[in-house]
Image 1 (tube, rainbow, N blue to C red):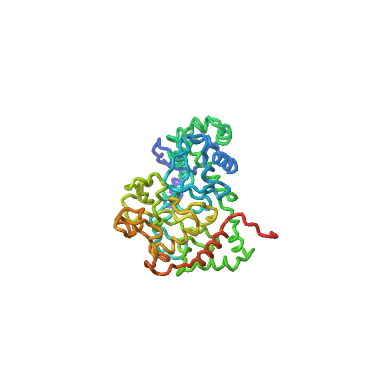
Image 2 (image 1 turned 90 degrees about the vertical axis):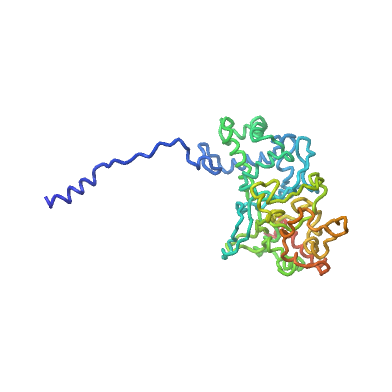
Length: 415
């Protein structure tokens, strides 16, 4: 019997076992509703890009029937505004003015999702860079497809009442056949899926390298060692990087990343630099109205964080020389003005801010009282009234010449 025991134990182990069946569930897996989840009718990247491109240039998706994404984000202007308006006009009659300038849509492909505590991939994880990432001037959109819905629904832009109105315009407009061909004949019978694909189409198009991150500037050619910068361009680059002069590279990173990626000329951070109030904007006619960026009014989840008030996204400086308006409220009209403001904000504040009835300069006039401590004071904002600015007029000219090397479309001779 003892000799048979091991055999009997082995035989018992080989018998079919009763396995408990998983409990029945009616809840679909979470990934099925995720933006990037696969679908039964999975379109190709090429077809999604084509669909997104068509939508981007299609004015029938707006209430006016005359405004497309490209109206405010022109491909001839690095997908930024094509004119000198502080903010672009939209709404039913194309005469509504919002509160923020249209940014360039180029070089956003690496923008991280928003976080209050960001750690750069620079080998030192002990440094908390603070609020960083996201889309829009206040970082509230977490992705390209989430951001794409904002202008479609904004009353100051394309003006649709809700997502259903967007889909109705798409279903009954000139792009309906292409949308069905791309996503299935019955796609409009599934409104949630149709909206998801519409927004994903716009995101995929805006991830197209040739259109949105071509890296074809003279500075890119310089980094590839294909060309040399002129003596003035090199002086401007040095001043741009110098921590005691322009200190621009502190936020607008100009060096190749440790992993080899070319610089985006932004750290994706949000910062308050005390930009003057733009009294051309209708909203600012109300003295009680303040656009405070990260803490409202457009963004609503951080309204209790008073220390964030007045902070806006650091935009890329790539193609900045193509712009005619600068900062989140479009208050400046030239790069010369911008550079002078940076170095004279505190040395000659009377040049940039209005006076109170008592004759004193009202610094940081686009912030409610009590938030002055939020304004950045790092170089070149570390000087006192009456001191020499960090950059002379000649040095400002050198920096601007360098900034012009960041414009895409440079052709390397003999290449």
